[in-house]
Amino acid sequence: MSAQKVRIAWIQGGAAKCEILPPLPSRLFRLVLLGAPGVGKGTQAELLCERLGTCHLSTGDIFRAAKCLAEGERSPALGAALGYMRRGDLVPDQTVLDLIRERTGCIRCRGGFLLDGFPRTVAQAEAFAKIMEQEQIPLDAVLNYDLPIEKVVARLSGRRTCPNCKAVFHVTALPPRVEGVCDHCGTKLQQREDDRPEAVRVRMEVYEKSTKPLTDFYQQRGLLLTIEAEGTPEEIYQRTLTALGSARGGKLRHPSRTNAD
Ligand code: AMP
Image (cartoon, rainbow, N blue to C red; front, top):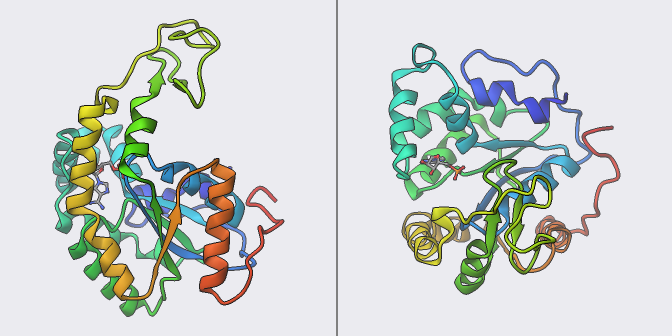
């Protein structure tokens, strides 16, 4: 398996090292991804990483991996962070920044990086800018996936999941063959509690309040590229390449080499 998929150094932190280094990309990308829940940021992260050969560095993945560790194997700070995560709160900036500082090797990685879920607050963004300055590493761009709130509500509130095999459907965009029944295992589909329209609106409010100021922060620094997140994943991906290409003053084509090469 490639270093991109395993990301040992990112997931474990400290002295952990990736056994296989990512191949030297034809173009190096150091990017931050922003976007509200439901804009399709995760799908774009997957496409970008797979096709540009960049490592997907998600802070949420660090916490999810820590959840699987025995209590004695987690640092006290990481243990406390999981409490915040369970309640749906943001983990304190100091804890998140300590984790990032432990992982500056990933920021220096020759494959570049795609940060997802960090920075999440202006304080984190300011501290991250200082780390990048100390490391003398420039950030190429901040990709901000944008979708009107009504569309986010429609996307998330139409989502149905299978409690058995975890398959995901959508009442209009990706309906199952038989309404309300999983195509793969025949189980009755469910709606996640936090996908109900009332809950989605609350999640959006939290996002607007804590994360939206980040777009102003990066706009002021000339790094923000806002991408319309409507259409198919492929259309949005092509829009992303166009935006990155114009930011670099030239057309950026989809690279023929993938990480699997
Ligand atoms: P995510 O997968 O990015 O939605 O993250 C899942 C959870 O991890 C969040 O709801 C937070 O509790 C926590 N988390 C992830 N990244 C951060 C961050 N940069 N700052 C604070 N909390 C975070």
